[in-house]
Image 1 (cartoon, rainbow, N blue to C red):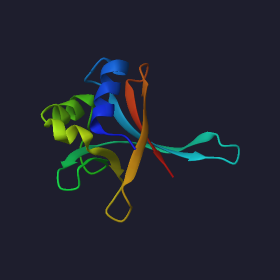
Image 2: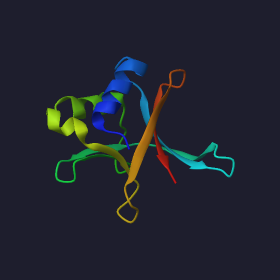
Image 3: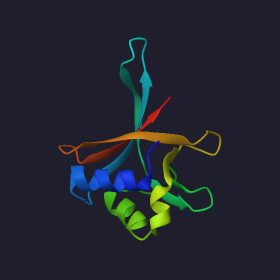
Image 4: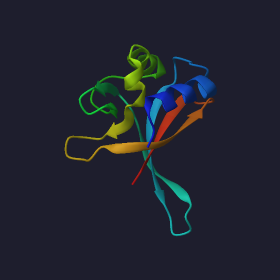
Length: 117
């Protein structure tokens, strides 16, 4: 599981806080040989901080979201919120999926949140 503070550090270090990266959620699964395989990806379109559940919810509900909107959302949070868990919310019918890692593709200007099946 990853926290907001981990994400902020990773964005600063790996994309230098660039504000024009598309956000992606990539579902990964482990095969019989313990290798990770891409099981699909989708563009993240919504960002929501749930203070009650202490989570940053990334989802697919409305318009477009980039690193600009993500950083604007988290930069105004207090220090306690930096330890909120980062999760992907597919829908109300699916359980929240904890983010297990981050990645970037500088050529395609994409920042990826990895979740496990």
